[in-house]
Image (cartoon, rainbow, N blue to C red):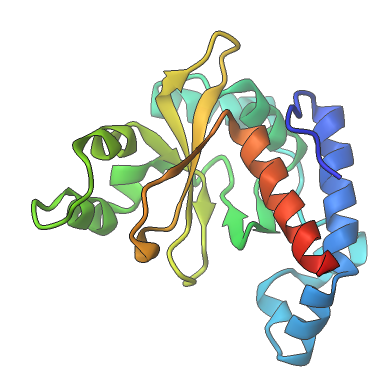
Length: 196
């Protein structure tokens, strides 16, 4: 279902539209509905539209975020935002709007401080990565998952290394080549789970 190199707004629109359709027709959502959890996963508007996203961010909003953060966002993530300003229910997380994204230590100071403690066995290398990561997700009170983009992990194509990190599980952040690879992997995992 997925392409690991979603570059353009058109490619993102197709990918996210396909995922929305899959999610809205999934056994996972039917089970959530029967348990009364579906209302936390998507709004009535999203269900009616068949789109788990939102209106696109404007170029001006993206530029304002880049100015606020002091960096140019990576191309695949930028184009994602220009397709949908945030997202509901991907990889067990929601993706933040362009106005909500920020540096991980600023948005999750308690988590960052805890993992910075000498009592933890978290590596100094991982801490250096987290210091320069943008937090782009919210798990809505779940098990503490994070999607991160590492500003110092920039490739020749302008893409940043992306990370999925579940600190409650005690593991290290899992790296991906870029945001689109991480998003495609999350969708592939969802589709695979639905097939079982």
